[in-house]
Image (tube, rainbow, N blue to C red; front, side, top):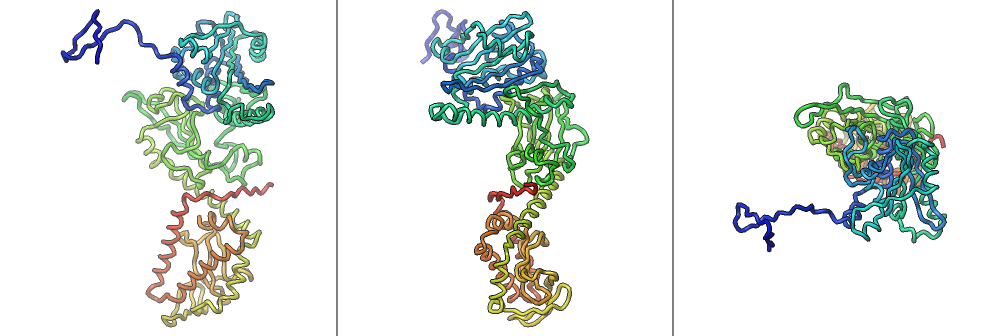
Length: 558
């Protein structure tokens, strides 16, 4: 039921509805909103990167991140820069949810929410300590527990402590700068602090966080850290005063890396008016064994989780590790990474989110990339991956003589199991006798097979990508060739190559399929059997697509 404002009633077009008018604002509930905005989806690495964005925007040339555990086991996170600093008016604006838009539209800070939401995602209290151009050091603080108590958007203004001043001056000297301090850190570790038995166990967990953060910042701000990159300002980022190293995700200095640049930037129109460029370049990385050094290989972190698009906004990496719903991540494409770089002018076109960690390009843009750009590098990445995998499979297969038991067993049992007789008559023909008579039959004649590989012969490739194929040795032994590059061999055989009974079982099955073909084929059905092998091999390929890849991380240098 509507309650009428008798002081100022206003009838709408519908005579039965009263439109009430008030002069005061409807303010959000401070307690509910402040705590609700803790759940905006930040992970720790993204949150710290968001705060560093503010440091870069403030013109900082140095940023240091420290994470400390006090004797009680409480964690604090401190991020210090030597940027332009802030006076009290600027500090209050920085602490405002939805702070005023910056004059520089290219600013890495975008919505005026990052400092607040990134901080409170992990702590219930955070402070800014800053020295502005007037030389005065000031402190302002949001304490969510205090907000809950007074239920008002009321920050605390405080005197900086001596230790906080020392932290600021350790980076900025007697010049301008800012410190962001997280206290009451309650969401940093996967488990609550009470679940860690000792301070030492908390310190180990924090150390692990630092290691992951170091990689994330190295790849996210690579272009800012790399002194040779001149398209954006340079900055020294440190963790505990140890510099973070720039990490090039495209491994461009590796001689085996292949690049597929788009000759002309992709032009995207904004609001149906002006167009702005998007840079696209695909990179096919070396196989792990082909990197120049083990350190370069390890830094590349090649895996199914690091393939795909690497999206840069104003030279800052904002998203990576997937195909933006264009494809699913697959091991066969783990060597492929695609640079997707754009400026702030395209924020609205790509729907950049609050965390600046996700974009949603229009469907027609992704269709163009899929149909006009990405196919050649995907083929190359797939081929390069499969060649490397096949070599590893071959190496392991030979090292443990995986099919030796099968060869011995089939050689012993073949005289009783064979229901056909073949005599080589040419390079790829034999006289075949089976229940359908005697006729000239097309079959590969293998020469040079090892003495112990007269029945099961693993090879690197077969026509049409087939898994198996009947063959005949020049000595007249009925044999089967098995394709090491087929996914069945790589995903099913590889994990069990050292288990002779299981390998013998699969080898015997494939040999038996060949012998069944030899004993039933005739002149009119030869091509149907070949089609059947191709069809089964393709179906197996599809069925095994989602089967996990085996661990093939056997490095030649180790």
